[in-house]
Each structure stands twice: as C-alpha cells, then as structure tokens.
Image 1: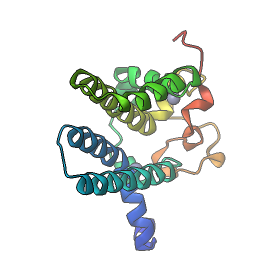
Image 2: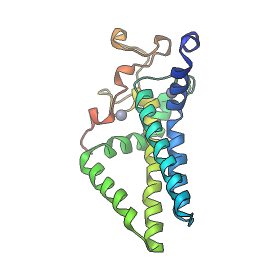
Image 3: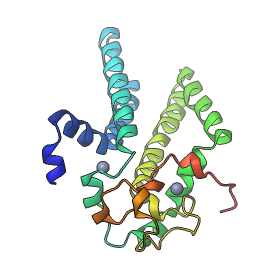
Image 4: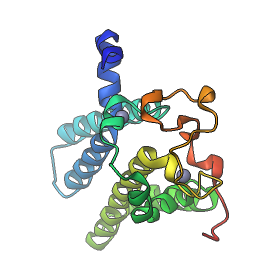
Length: 196
Ligand SMILES: [Zn+2]
Ligand SMILES: [Zn+2]
C-alpha cells in the first residue's frame, strides 16, 4: 500500500479505473442494448452514443494498461485457493483463448458488427443477444487475468504449482504475492489447438 500512496493521483485513478474497466465495459454494453429499445430524440441518441463510445475506449485503454500486471486490488481479491478456482472456472480460460484465435475472432466481429444493420424486432432481439455475449467474454477475460498463473493454456505444466517460483528475477509483480506475472500476457501468446 505504501507504493500506492506514493503514486500521483492520476496514476492511482487510472489504476482504479483500469481494475474496474471490465465492469465499466459491461455497464456500457448494457446501456447500449437498453438504448436501442428506446426511441430517443435524435440529438439525445447521438450524444448518448458518443458518451458510450468515449467510455468504452477509455475503459479499454485503461484495461490494457492495467492488465500488464496485478494491481493491489487484484492481489487482495485473489481467492485463498486459486488453483481450485482455476479448475472450477476452466471454461472461462478456454473461452478467453479460443476467442483470441483469428478463426473465431474474425467471424465473431463480422456477426457483431453486421447485426447492427438488423432493423426488424426479431433482428433487434438477435442483435441484443449477440451484443450481450460480449458480457461473458469480458467476465471470462477478467477471470483469466486474475488467475492466469493457474491457466492450463498459459502454463506448460498445466497450471497450479505456483508456490515455488523457479525464476523470481524475471517477474515484475510484487514478490510478496508469489504470482509469476511473467505469464500475465495476451492470451493469444499461448493459443493452443482446441484439443483441450
Ligand atoms: Zn487490478
Ligand atoms: Zn491462459
């Protein structure tokens, strides 16, 4: 906490917002979906869209910055038995890695963007479902970020076993935590074939 106290308030604010960026993005998605079903005046709809886009961009940038290491809040929120949680939440790890593969990512983005052109009521319901699927992706990504050292797709030994850190020098995360942040990278780094 001493480190955090010495940080300029702008960095502290960016770290806090970065830590909660997932929740901000989920709120933005819910706002977009809700707004689509209300016929707002054109100016208000435009202003709301602009605000949502700015919030999403800011949250995304701060999330990228935040994800380079575990912040104090991340560390404090680590479960007592992370390896057990990792086994329970294994599906989220799989989703995170699979969604990062271009063969899934590109068609997903095409459907995500293309669904915006649906104007009928069933089309808009389909659009809402597709947009809301991003909520699960964000939840999966957030879980993966917190428990990445125990992710079997990121760890050659299948995750777990993090008590002994073979090379603490290379790691930038706070040593007291014992979490090897060298593995806190983009999940695309270790995308494996879908045989797991
Ligand atoms: Zn954090
Ligand atoms: Zn992983």
